[in-house]
Amino acid sequence: MIRVQREDFDVGRELQELAAGDHTIGGVASFIGLVRDMGQVSALTLEHYPGMTEKKLAEIEAEANRRWPLSASLVIHRYGRLEPGERIVLVATASPHREAALAACHFLIDWLKTDAPFWKSEATPEGERWVAARAEDDKATRRWRGE
Amino acid sequence: MRLLYFAWLRARIGHAEEDLALPPEVRDVAGLLAWLRAREGRYGEALRDLSVVRVAVNQEYVGLDHPLRDGDEVALFPPVTGG
Image (cartoon, rainbow over all chains, first blue to last red; front, side, top):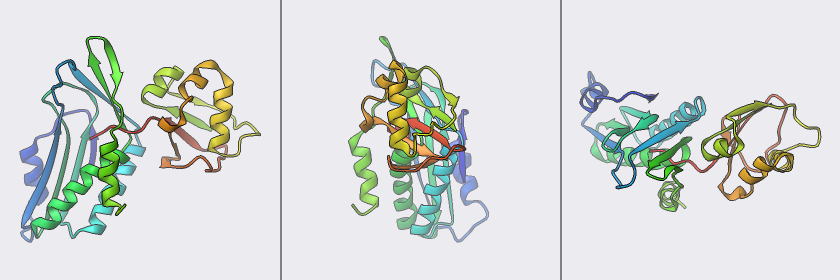
């Protein structure tokens, strides 16, 4: 399931609901991305491309389900203004066995960082500045493509 | 066609979207970018370095040789930084 939303989410409730009712699930893996305090930055503002964002996230989720035997998966990504300590993203995967859940969770967060159309702008004492893409993120995604 | 701009491309160009009749000489993405760059100073400035411009047509990533049609939704934006 994919959700793109401004509001926060309850991690405990989301993880519980992901596995609820399916007793063949043996493990749930999750990744929570937070706004990191980097001293000068008082807030992040996330912009996205409505429509394409949901489409790319659904494609990424479908690809994870093709690669691993997942019982359930969830990606929640927030947009708007977020302060240090706030949650940005939740990726969660459930599977009968831990290997698939952990690997698919790692794959999803790596892939969405380079494929989903979101952009971060940082509020600093000198004004707003756009965050540049990191070469390490591209490298992480290429690894999953077998490059 | 509908043109959409995001992040610093939107900020530099000065608006988030515009409707445009496909110019007859524009056949593909490379042609559109060249046409926009020649159009006005702020477009030339925003699109000066194409290594930091990504293009999506109808919400799919495409390369410079992707053909364009008049009903297309074309989005121009910098490399993504979500997650």
